[in-house]
Image 1 (spheres, rainbow, N blue to C red):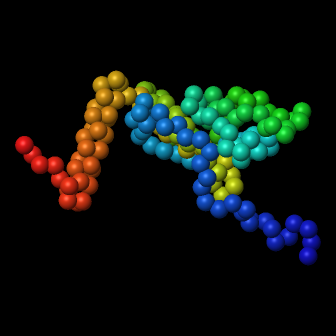
Image 2 (spheres, rainbow, N blue to C red; image 1 turned 180 degrees about the horizontal axis):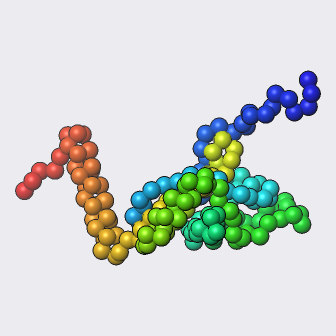
Image 3 (cartoon, rainbow, N blue to C red; image 1 turned 90 degrees about the vertical axis):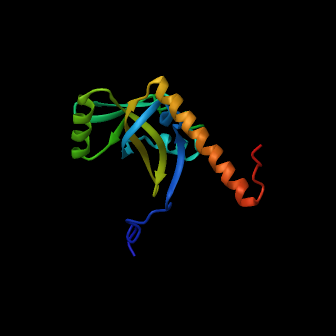
Length: 171
């Protein structure tokens, strides 16, 4: 058997392993649509990500000249890297289909919409970024969401107590 034959197409890792999430994004933005994009990375960046080290809290994406770029993503330098190590906060290219990019350009031009990275993860061994097309929330919208979440939590607790037979008596 020749070298390399039979290995093509096999994936070492199966499934989805989350590296970093932007939990604050759902609080600050109303998500309209989500996209999955590949991320163009250097070797030491992937090794650093395999250690679970990344931050997408301050990250955002832009569309420039028909290409999508991710700004503000922090991937710390790989500890065992040499002179080939990467710059931690460099701009990285996102890989999307052309029709997806054209659709994003059209939606962003409508105004008031931004591209926010929601999570960074490994999908079958490849690094992917979940991008959301989102509109910023106003302060009163955030308060309404928190009040709604609290009410749902209280209802779930009451239902749980009633199911256990420990319903509070109404006095």
